[in-house]
Length: 314
Image (cartoon, rainbow, N blue to C red; front, top):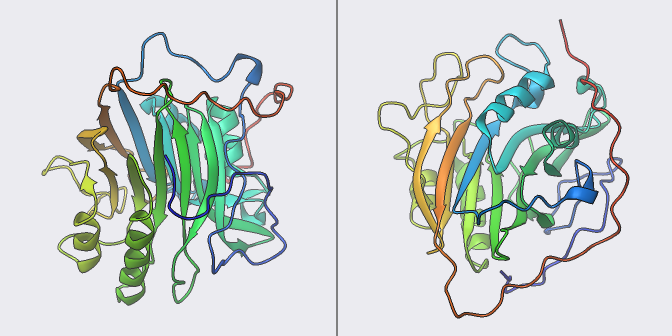
């Protein structure tokens, strides 16, 4: 996996005291271990033959009942056994959610690696997107998108390393929500242009805030293959009684073979329903080059302290 432009690797932590509406793609923390690294990365007994990819706008852990309950979010994810989770509307250090690093907390709670990229300062912290992964995460960064009228936007870009050494690029997306699609289409156009510079297998997922046959969705469809949902169960928003489809999982590349996606019948934990996609993996080519070894990285830190639930509202 490589880029045809300069690629950076994660070495920095999040500065929340300055703007994160970036005009260029910058590097942010990703791939943090969320469990005892002395026993990670977990090596499955058999090669991974498919990926379970979950996309979910979690509304910073606030449900349709307006209760803030990140533990409820964690239980929903846990029950679905995903390999990769792309999260939208995630807080880090914001007062409204008790100053919690939500992606980091979920990663620790679920025993998954975690990362976060912001697109703006918010309430004393930052607001953006997160990623969780059962598999090793490498260089995580933002891809700059044109700003919306009310909020800046970026995409989350990370590399997931399969047990056989192959890499899959994973991009999380949250496009502008206004009814007028001018900014949303501009963001989708910029996204497609940046995706064209990425070589190798690619998964893109998130809240696109639009539905077919809009020009935004049709533009993405010309570039990526949607992991199809059942025709009679494809609506994702609002969670209690969904009327529109705005959340998607897409893929590109011969290695990835979309099997199908399911909209999870979760009506309370967020205002969006989660989308779980199953993507089969083509077998590695025999007789080819030996896959690169995983980087050893820094010495493993001590195990994290026991997880306690973040603040919740009554």
